[in-house]
Length: 495
Image (tube, rainbow, N blue to C red; front, side, top):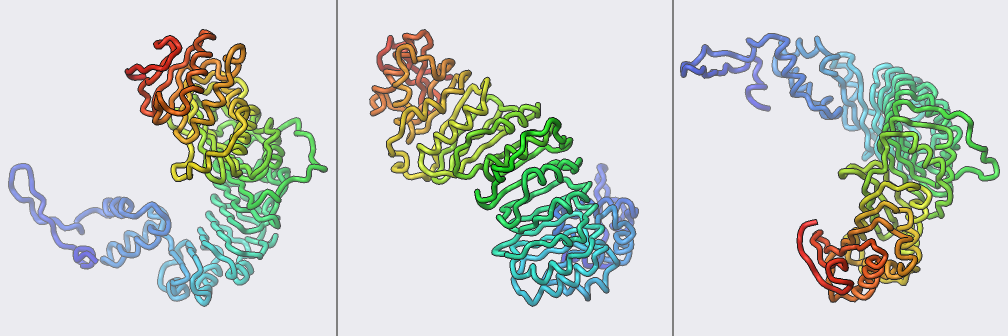
């Protein structure tokens, strides 16, 4: 430890004055209690686990510091951190009865006794963080079947677990909890617990296994009572978790409002999302991420309605499509801020383009998108993009982008796109991308193999009275039919 902090009588410090003279020797002990308290509060870290282990260093400096700190436990948010490596029973006998925070990522099963010892002080436990627990649940869950009236945060991350949380978990009630994170842990009676969580702010249900399935109706009913909820994540482990199509009901006439919800994330099948969205509204929503399993996205009308009722969740003016090896992603943004993101877990560029087209044609409607970027993953082998594709799939993807002015295409997929655009000639020249006037092609070369297709598209658009200029990936104009009279050429200048 620093020798200044280790001394019970801190050393004096000379403070120079503006006149050049040295002031009388001043020690930190001469500072008022309130000033010292401000210093302690400033020095303590914000992260809960660092804060819980940092304040104890100050109380060992001197008796006065110890008195000041223990006299203000609420202001300094003093808590005791109990882990599997902490001699919990001994520690709790030494320190004052402060709130308890428990952190456990099992390494030694024999150390579970320390965690159990901390859980036995149910009236003092404020936070529980269990990372990657599996066999430990059999011993820990029975200790957690009584109420924890002061619990504010619960994080349980399972791995290879088969234990289902019982309906008596936490005594069936958690009135003060603000954060609840369950990952790969089945808890089918969760809706009952949530009915008591009036102060819940953040709810994350990730990798929900099939034996922990909760119907969209039950999920909507329980979250509709969470008036303080700002962040909601519902993430299923597999597409097998889906509603029974034979018992699906028409959308209700009235919908529950989540008045504070701003961020929503979902992973599952579109049928579940539609049934869930049909029952709720979130007027303050401003960020949404949706991930669908490999499926035909045939109907997302409720999602479109749900987003349409959130004024802050705008589509923006820019869309970006990212083609990966096993999924495709499309983001809608404005000034680099993503408001809405879709991912579809599927392989093969043809299937990925078709999946994005299904979403865009149902979702965009009267589109405000002015710029569209299409990229492939940087480390994706070029051979992956060499498959023969149906050109109509690209045209179907572009069809709803009626206001698009700028189209950006990365190098390895240019041949597919420009080949599709070549088919737009004569009367069909303006059927797709009617407002397009700039086409950006990464590493574009006038003598490249795509040139005949590009020239055919440029000439067709010029004859229709809506010319399109070609730019390279650095956004400098390389070719314009308007300037070259319908033949290949180049020009320069900024966009």
